[in-house]
Image (cartoon, rainbow, N blue to C red; front, side):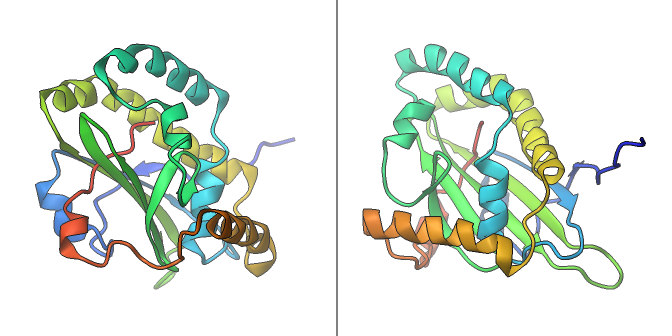
Length: 214
């Protein structure tokens, strides 16, 4: 039996359609990766974001465990610290903004301020829809520069792996498959008291954009 061929996860330009585009030029580090979406895939960016980030390969969890041992003496947040942070989150990351076509995650750490945009680019002119994951970082200190230089290769591998695993698990379809994701998110908001509105409504908030280093 022939194995199914999946769309390739590819490096991409930072998407102009992202609501973070005004901060692209100020980022100390930035990259983006994208993958084609199949016909009938969900058109809700939050559904796709949860599908990507809430099901990570085991080796990424192992790397996060190793990372935790090394970063604690420097005062950097571990995955456990992020999970304990509470509030509106997808996986271990805070939700800073959500729209039908884009979700923005991130966190502020001692070394850097990091965020990620998950942008749904609709199909057009015979081209399939695409999911674009963009990451940006602003260094808070010299430690941030050294830290990013060390783990950037692992970050790129992890983003590729997350997108690849997500598509092999099957992309959530339209409304039927979206319901469990959205119901779970609404329950989380009710428990934390976090409203479902954007918190990146001011330009000063957008200045804090950075990078998710998985």
